[in-house]
Image (cartoon, rainbow, N blue to C red):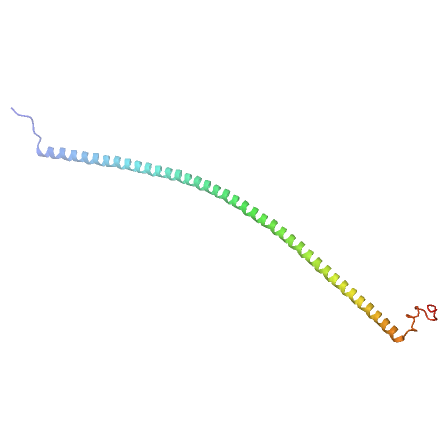
Length: 163
């Protein structure tokens, strides 16, 4: 009786080669599938990263825009304060200039009045001195002329004042 038949070495070699080719083909197919999965997952990661970058970039832009708006509000408030301060200072300066001008005009007017008063006093003194000099001349000529002068005779020649 013959037992189960054992394949000969040539058949075993062919079968082995066939299985190896099949395993190599399965290995290639498995590698190809894994490569495609890796590529898809890698692309998915990059897409996710790009989407997150766009989201973060948009959030940063919104934050910067909000901060810029706050900065503009602070700038406008500061500008209004500076303009108000400048306006108040201008008003104070105008008021001070007006007061100083009025003081100057008042002093100039007082000085002008004092100069005019001094001139009037000088003219009055000159007039009084001329009058006094004239009086002294008249008195001196009357004293030198003696009792027959018109002053001593009643002031009129011909003796109307005498008796």
